[in-house]
Amino acid sequence: MEGEQWGMVEKTGTQFLVKGLPFFVNGFNTYWLMVFAADHSTRGKVSEVFRQAAAVGLNVCRTWAFNDAGWRALQISPSVYDEEVFKGLDFVVSEARSHHIRLILSFCNNWEDYGGKAQYVKWGKEAGLNLTSDDEFFTDPTIKGYYKAHVERVLTRINTFTNVKYKDDPTIFAWELINEPRCLLDPSGDTLQTWIEEMAQFVKSVDPIHLLEIGVEGFYGPSTPEKLQQNPKSYMGEVGTDFIRNHQTPGIDFASVHIYSDTWLPDSFSDEHFDFVESWMQDHMDDAEKLLNMPVVFGEFGVSLKDERFTTEFREAFIGRVHKMLLMSKKRGGSGGGSLLWQLFPEGTEHMDDGYAVVLAKSPTTSNVLSLHATKLRKVNSESPWKNVSSEDDDLSHDEL
Image (cartoon, rainbow, N blue to C red; front, side, top):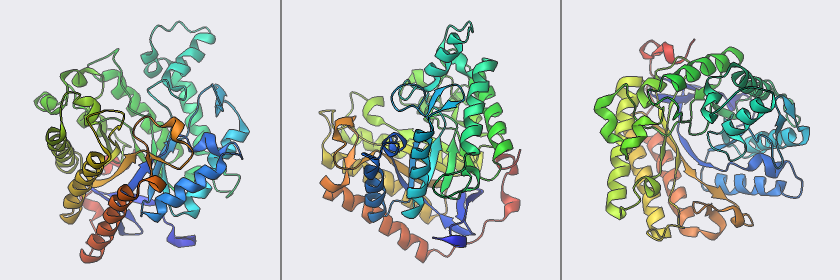
């Protein structure tokens, strides 16, 4: 993986490629890596989670490249940074590479955890702006300026461990605009769509090389009324996101979808969840292939064991069902680009468990499920000679501004 072999991930049509060979996302989320790496007493946990993930064949980690105000903040106030926390992020990038794991780095949060859009609006109010809704994050010129400044600061950061600028580092698989954006202020979707268009163009103006995704949950919106019934709940078509329209934005390279049937279907049991997973995934893979001409990554999926309906065995079957759908897609050259489990924890961090944490050291059967998927992926790769997808077949509007 060192030197020239560690190439940048690209996409051609519905496929991810590295140096002309297929690349499949088999990954996990561990959102708090930067803040743990910022403190030498907890930095070892970062190495531990990468080591354990690599041991079961995982190859991509999604994590936060933000922490706005609050405890161990990266961005203390607009454009004011804690260098020690930034060095923590540097360590995460460096350590990921040493374990042959690539990163999806998210720039901001829709939710209040780690600051997010609410903190940006709070900063705006402190600066004298007349703001009445957190969703004005998407419309106010000053707030958008704060966000762009943060994005540029991350993209142009020179890693203090590797001396490589983030925007030049192939360790980074992709950038994510914002985790799970919603804009209830405008159910039509126009406000969020305008923001996505502006920010995708901005990211690509600074870093035209890396892949870019939005971070949406995958809800269908007003542009495709015939698909609204595919959302798990009717209100999800009115939260300001629009899966098809959002992903037709120039500069967005692949689609993002999350899978949380445990919370989306609160009164359902086993078989209904499996049925939902299969239809939700297939609908989005079909759309990514036929309408968007891009890969789709299921960027978060998991089951909370704090919910009494579910056991570890159910969670493992749930993971297995997600893996099965992606393997079927991969075998036929479909758009299923991979998935990222929410979430992987090392031992000693269980106090932060939201119910979804998988501690591999304490979960041998779950480790086996993950290892088996990695083995099957390698087998599919070896048995299916790659046929290069002609760049002429690609919809360049998704790759070039």
